[in-house]
Length: 167
Image 1 (spheres, one colour):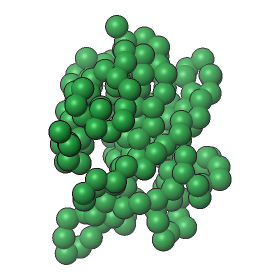
Image 2: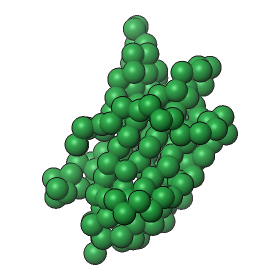
Image 3: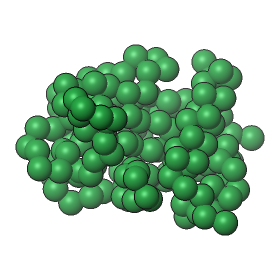
């Protein structure tokens, strides 16, 4: 059974909301920007004027099996997933999913660095970027996310922090 993009994004958002209640690379981007906006605790999007940048991270074991399978995601207690969505703000209609170059680096609180390869997923009317990574119980990762929307030169840069709980 094919899961539509709306169902996938809804499942990711629902899983993230459930987790937050129990919680205390594409070409084109050559480097991680030093200047970035840190998202507040439990904040998962930033308005950059013409664009909205949505970010979300969760344990892949929180995804329903059929959603994980349709998106090619490995479900595991020790795997995390980062989801990045770029929306172009339009005056006359709904915000439109937008492509771009996405680069992500992460580090845990002990300073252990990891690069996260992001892959573009296009389904019907949706465009999003997914990256998977290993995670340990109670590990906090700080994600530095740099995005350059297609046909733009301005870099959208955010810092996003997430603590993961494994079984």
